[in-house]
Length: 446
Image 1: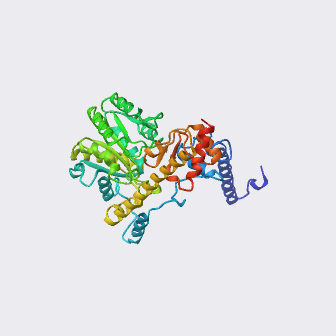
Image 2: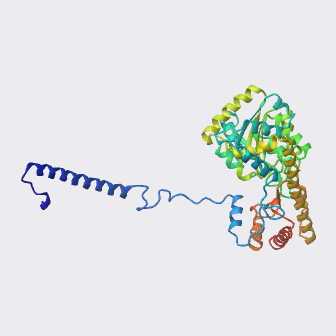
Image 3: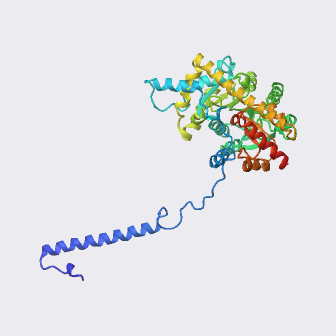
């Protein structure tokens, strides 16, 4: 026994010694437990590998990965810019934001689950038309959501829960995120023919055959305008054939409207395909985004509208959409949607927006013409007339993956591996460089 813990001669010292011995034993036990916990804790930063060591690095998104590669390049060419090479914020958007900032009555309270009521009303009016019978008869329910992607996901989740068919047909090719959104929502994804690489135009006959053989009631994804990635849209006559075929087979249309106003520069013209389906009294889904046409990319402003045959059905659908949205993110953000409301509800600001929107669309059309003329002037092999026949932000150039890789390596030009380029990323200064790169790639990497 250690001297300091020898038996005491008095009762008081004996009592004190017992307390000290108890304290020492307690501290010794606590120390052992602590050491054991550190040694075997799965979250300890001092011993062993991370519990997430097995996680495999995911590949870059095929579209957003282009931006990542561009940002890493010490001498890149091309990005989404104005003719002056600057990111674009519309003047009317800045004006709307200033008005919101000056309004001292505004608060930051949570929105309702479906978002701003006025935003939903104005968004439905914009896409379906002010005189839409579906709106007049209260057969439309619209909910605010996170841009077009979020609106697609909410619609898909609803269909997976409440629609008798679980298969959605998407065009081949389509935006790379479409199959992921619908698959993760619980739908089975199949494709229908859309693009003909030999003509670099539409495979309309293939489309009709594939939709004609789809099971009755299947869901069909349709790009409302400015098809991404091909830039190839049906004519109005072709849209009417598609509508008749789909209605005859009770196929459910799900429109993705990401570019209203960006294709032609006219909001009504770019919504014609949707309005044709609504006019026949049938049902459809529409995902709507303000990323492109108002330049509100980072604000993630969008809406999902469901057109039903009766008002009471629309009301019940909205009640179930709330149950989809609530556990997903509770309610949408307020700022971006408030910008949209400020612009759409004021006639002067709305007119100012349409002028700026048409200017953007016209610049894209001008870039198409300049690129086509530059390739023709260089005598680049092949028929490049598809560049001016296609419409919207993107051009499906027809370049293969090896040619795309060559252009990135030799000319620091970035596009997706399928040859899709954003015409909005071009300017009069960069068109010659792109034309040189395409000419070189086609002649050397054919």
